[in-house]
View 1: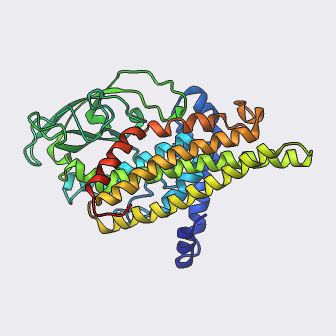
View 2: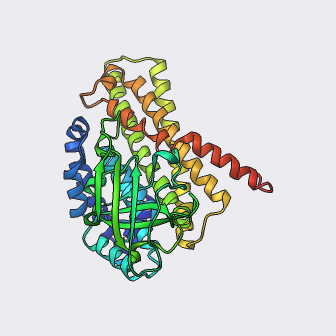
View 3: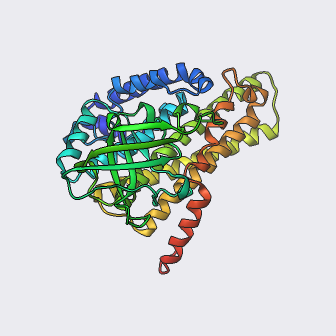
Length: 398
């Protein structure tokens, strides 16, 4: 499936096979229920159960916390494979891995957070995030909500947050919530708060009937919670996001989108082979198929390079440089735009068979799901941030 798994097989000939078998089991379950998940805009509960059964919810967790400690390349491979079965399942898994990585890497040895990390891995908890707010305009680095009563690890702190989207929040065992450090803090002086589901009251504020990624179940909620002070992360949220959350999630999101694009191309190839047997099709169709393939190859190369960069950043345990942040933002923009272009090229090849919502050559749901990619942290916002960082690094040759 990838070079990283091949290397894993060399050190343990059965481990790579076990991983492939586990991922395939989840992907098959996800595919079996994907249409119903999409139609009903419901959580892929069957696939989530399969992820737990195969120990894949803990995929990113290091071995010293009881996890399998998969590399970034391996995580990307898992994301790609599951996405080909069900985009919503793969996206939930990718978002969860980003949150689990934050907990595993930034607990700081604090007893409460360390205990949560170990339990999350052992019990295969599902972890969601609550970062967005109406006033922030989609900027997760700014909060209106504030933690009240924070004074070290002792005592209880409270918070109340209007979160515009909380993907799979109603099904999560743990929510990681951003808020200002105190009611007097600036909007960008944020902390991350770990909130057990039983510690939170979630009042649904909106419906969920989107174009695609319908199974992620991401309505808005008003969240109120009271938790022990020890469940507030010691690292500022800016550090958690920069060192872990953003690079991990952007890389795994790209893996999901690449998996969807690859599935669209696969269906286009199958249609083209059937037409070739019947001597149908023309130059324009073949050119569209050829363009889809080279775009897919370029996205594969870009993601492989970025997976290596993300792994190096995680291994170093440092904050990313401006140049590294530019690479991460650029991956997100390029992957989201290119994957959607590939899906549309595949539609041109498949024709009505691809346009239909039914049948083995349909790419309709793939296109709908990929339509969410450019607006998950809006690309225009990322491009503006990237331009500012490029201007800051005046000595760099771009």
